[in-house]
Image 1 (cartoon, rainbow, N blue to C red):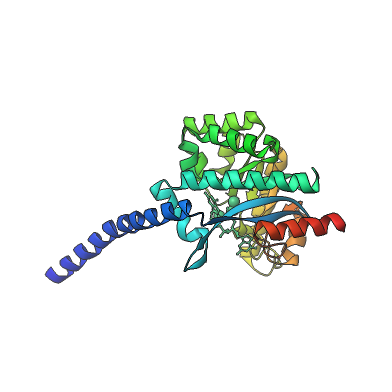
Image 2 (cartoon, protein in one colour; image 1 turned 180 degrees about the horizontal axis):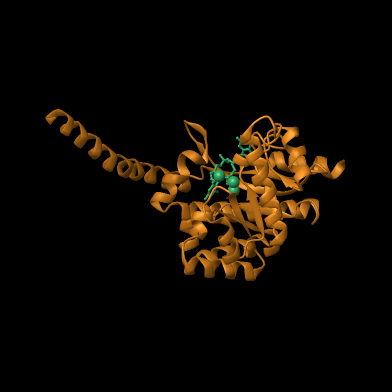
Length: 287
Ligand code: C2E
Ligand code: CA
Ligand code: CA
Ligand code: CA
């Protein structure tokens, strides 16, 4: 019993201390990386499913690490949020994606790209300077507010009256708000009545396996039921929808059949550097 007690203490101690040390270390690394310009913005096309055309892009950050190569946001966004570095990092993604979208609009015209959609974390929404940052990013890029969609998760939006007021102000500027990973939270419906969303993004977990026969698996039937419910709700509330994580044509066809017109996923296009998207937009123009 004595030994077990000791082991428990060690585990408890480890559990309490490790994340703190890990965050302190990675916090310094992220700061250095930001100063050294190691972050890159990748762009994943959001497609018109029926016509196979790019209608917008989601901006997704990557870390071009000097020795580790291209690092996925899953590996550093949680630490960036924990240390508060997400505020300057998110500001960089916002500014860079607005600047890049303005450049694409200048080169390809107003119909080539309707929207640019950076992700915004709860820490940014709580930052008193966030609204000023957004205005400055638009002004410096020469981009109109109605070209911008801010992607927010439910947990970010559920943070009380101050955040809600910020969201209403952004909406008042003409910026659109998208509720990301829709269907994975707990109070999605009541939330949509409370905050000025224009778009819901159907989470990938409801797209996975949606192409399987309804009779085949109960899981596929459940996913189709959710996808159907989300589109009906979106219609009733006058929201646009984007289906996420489409990995094959059968899924795209099934979603089109359910009434989804916009989608995103590896089958349609992967996240890519700005230069690759420029080539894609040029191909699309010349088609
Ligand atoms: P998210 O906002 O839900 O972004 C969609 C993620 O799904 C992206 O992963 C994208 O590459 C991936 N994806 C797209 N299509 C498919 C598909 O067909 N199959 C699969 N398996 N995955 C697909 P990524 O770029 O690794 O980003 C992961 C998450 O990190 C994002 O999820 C978002 O929550 C966060 N993130 C990325 N960039 C930023 C950022 O600039 N700021 C903040 N706050 N969070 C970010
Ligand atoms: Ca997103
Ligand atoms: Ca998502
Ligand atoms: Ca997600």
